[in-house]
Amino acid sequence: MRQPEARGPEAKGPSACTDTTPAADATRAAETALAADSRPTAEPAPGAETVPAADSRPTAETTPAAETTPAAETTPASETTPPAAGIPPADDPAAPSPAAPSPALETLARLASAAGEDELPVLLDAFWQDVEARGGTPLVEPVEGDPRYRAVTFLWRGHRATRQVLLLANRLYDREHLADALLTPLPGTDVWYRTLRLRADHRASYRLAADLTPGDLPAGPEARQLRLRALAPHAAHDPLNPRRIGDRWGQPDSSVFALPDAPAQPWTERRAGIPRGRVEGHRLPAGALGAERDVWTYLPPGGPRPDSPVVVLCDGDMWFGRLALEDTLDALVADRAVPPPVVLAPDAVDRLTRWYDLTAHDDYVTFLADEVLPWAAERLSLTLRPARTAVAGQSLGGLTSLYAALRRPDRFGAVLAQSPSLWWRPGLPHGTPKLAPADETPWLAERFATDTPRPALRVHLDVGLHEGTMVDHSRCMYETLAARGDLVSLREYNGGHDYACWRGGIAEGLVNLLGRAGARRPQD
Image (cartoon, rainbow, N blue to C red; front, side):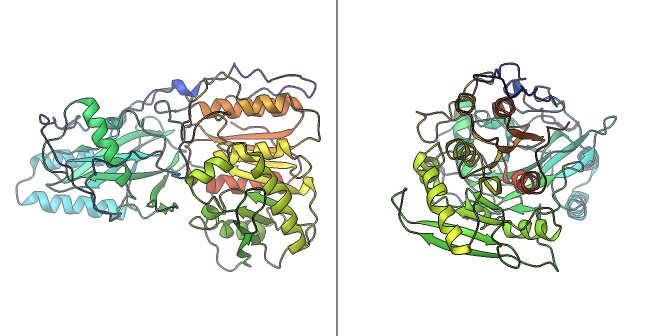
């Protein structure tokens, strides 16, 4: 990984962020084909078709509704995110990822081709039992001659009505070319598969959707893309994978995989036998935002102390809902990795409100700085010092965290920004992430570079190598903050725009900001 070169505190003006390596030039990862059949079966000629409504059961195969609007990124579904420009990195974000075979499927293909009519069902049952015995899907197998990679095979057990199966793996597919994310049927079997060659430290979430629609499939690329876009919103967790991560606002769970060398997430699971903190929900009266707002609070075991560090965290409904951040905080406190913190986490309400609040909205910064913090200080007898107060968030929440610290350094002295949406700039309509070029300085970085002198911030940035130009934008922000003399760290992980990665990264970021003085530079 390239380490951004920090400029000294005396540097003036916008940071020159034009020398980064554009992750947007990454090439699409190739699907591995079996020796028996390397391509999907040919599609019939298009016909007039009526597409029935979908089955809403999350683990069932679904039939897309023709009028359904396309889904955005699989996880999180909380906002529209800029599309990944092809499939990113192996060792370098711009490097291609060549195909790798699945030994298990090569063996199955060979045996199935030789099996008699009575032998085939027994063979397939044995295969699926073996998949379950391995711990479920996806299958993870070595790549011959290269221990840095794994062959990762996603599977679906179909039947005669299965027409096509769509894999929506976080940042491992291009939303504009969904046909490239289809699974391939293994001839003569009920197995649908797709094998990717991924670096052995990869972690991601994904969903699957199977099309049961009768009639001919569209043959033209544009018609097929429309059909798959209608199918995508019905994607749900993989029924063969027991590892899941929740979502909100009615979205189904996603499935999660982590390859053997993926960074450990030692604080994410609920741990038995340790003291528990307390999560409370409160409603603050209407103020700067013109409406009442719900705020989740985490109080550490034994209760808060006047000198407890305070973390203001965006998207409280997600973190203290499906993600159970309290388990992570309890484990951090039990391990003495951080001083026992108080966490104040406003509810995001809904997608439209979230977009409005978390796009450099000064009223929202006022809400955090002059309403949430004073309310908590009075109620919990906290001593609010900027040096002990952090603001944190992911995606648009990461953008907002940086913006809040820029606007109110009297309140916030530390920032945890995970996958910050630095592509945003004033004037973008809701849900329209028109990406600036990778070598263009983000709007917020320019604001920081031209800001008046003030006390140094402590900032931890976190971004996935599969996030396209967002990698370059985060590096640019790192350079800008370092040039100002801020204490800043940047962690680049092998993953995407994904709560499956953020729930481990938030713990690492809190340890970096609250658990020790200063910050560390990015590590290879």
